[in-house]
Length: 443
Ligand code: ACO
Image (cartoon, rainbow, N blue to C red):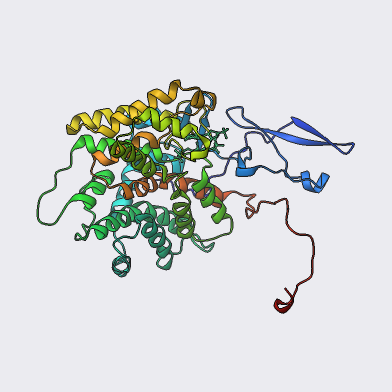
């Protein structure tokens, strides 16, 4: 394993000669145009306020680049997703989640020796400090596992340094390994706790994904058999979720890191950001939507009519994406995986039929076509999780386990960036002008 934490974000455009000109109040301003390695262009506006007294305003950061990054490339128009230059289709088919985690964090596919060392590290750091086991008792059985995951992750900072600025590179490397390994244990323990079963500790003989299944579904009283096909689909699910450049949770991780906070605090913040229904919570929302359509006996065409009526405020969950204005390549892979795993397990799921029907109708409906709304990664993932026996409230936790290597890769890139600044956006103030304080008796 490489221990080079000092990897630098490349600036493919250091010899930039391209400029964009802005004319404002008779004054012309030249701003450098930055070109990425896939020829993406960005105007560097960092001097705009100093030179012209202007800031840029971009609600939801729809058109704002927050950093230059070497990790993941997305072309939303063409439906391309690559981790460190390698197509997601190839990784999903040929790689494993642990290998992809290495690729994202260290920049290259590992040699056999590097992969062995990395995997051994994950195996050796899977246990939680026994004091932390008592924490689980403090949560009500109804607690959402994302609440437990986020607060337990933050609690890890009480046991380990986590990038407080005074650590050796080796010790920081260990924090990355700890997070990858221990979050899996926390996630599975939170599930066991919620159903009142004894905790199943990680088993060093099992692979990363087989261990997830074992910790969630084994019981001490009997043998638990883990099917290879299930392990394969679990690897695929986690690989497909592993990174997605500057999404809400990853940007959160980078932003919190920019303040110098512990890596455990950064990842905990990322988990909280992921929880929302417009982000990682969408897989849960998709399944609930499908269940609701099924239980109400509603025709899915009627449901789409409701979705298109803006007054209803109902969205077709699992459809649409801020970046993809074409098919999300991950959704294509999962649609096939979904058919394969349901077939293998002999499950005929009416929700899958509803999902396929909704997809077929939506893809030819002008409302969705005009807005370029296609199925995203979450449209089929929930059906697969259900088939594997994973309960709905654990879906977003599974997403978090998958996204973790991406968060760590971005954390590391941000941590090592030599021109790093604390992230601090500006605003356009629209509130009251200066006014006096009025004592309560006079209001
Ligand atoms: N169902 C119905 N209409 C939709 C949907 C949807 N799923 N998504 C977008 N639209 C409509 C909006 O109403 C809007 O219509 P308008 O132009 O008439 O006002 C238009 O399409 C553009 O939508 P925005 O919300 O502006 O697009 P944005 O890029 O901000 O949002 C988002 C992207 C949040 C993913 C959105 O498509 C959505 O809410 N989807 C459903 C939730 C979901 O599946 N989230 C998972 C995303 S993937 C991930 O995080 C892993």
